[in-house]
Image 1 (tube, rainbow, N blue to C red):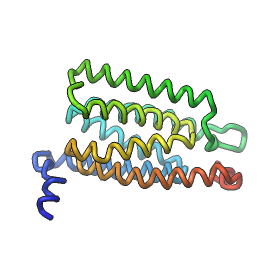
Image 2: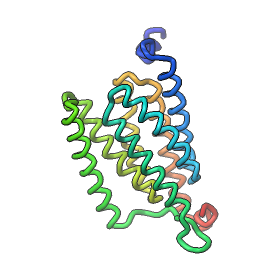
Image 3: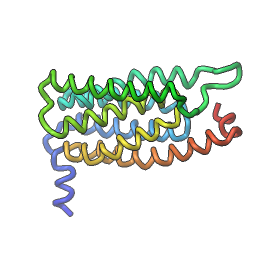
Image 4: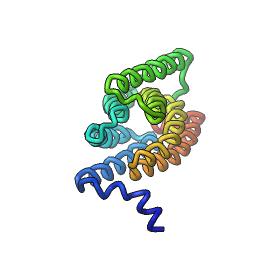
Length: 213
């Protein structure tokens, strides 16, 4: 038991109390953000902004450039999403949950490829393209880039990108030595699955859709 605990949390013995506290706070706000997304609640964005700002700082300190870029992008898209979700499509209804149309699917593909190339060149620039972790980081970054963009536009498919990225991130962050963040992504995965199912109910039920908007 102690060996397992030491394997999971032993790396924190060399961290400052400030970094550990900030990571836990960021994880809590990150979980709240995903929970509010599941509930189609506008609080998804302010809670997400707090989490991403803290992670940008921590990831910069830990020299995890790819992950830092993800969270910087999250911050920008959270501000954009906050605007979109509160924008009225007519005099009485806010932006509804919808399926992506063909144009948006093509845009998602373009964003995915662009994110792959962008993160690849960033890793090359910082001379960090040196093992399999960089490759996986690049792939998950692209997934999350698309997922965040679709969430900001209230497209149900964003959950599928979150689920895929979250599942990969659980062992990835555990391998990197950030157990609290790994646990966060494990819970993210569970919430995202339920979120997708809940959004499916809303999008297929005009009464629920009208209530939420």
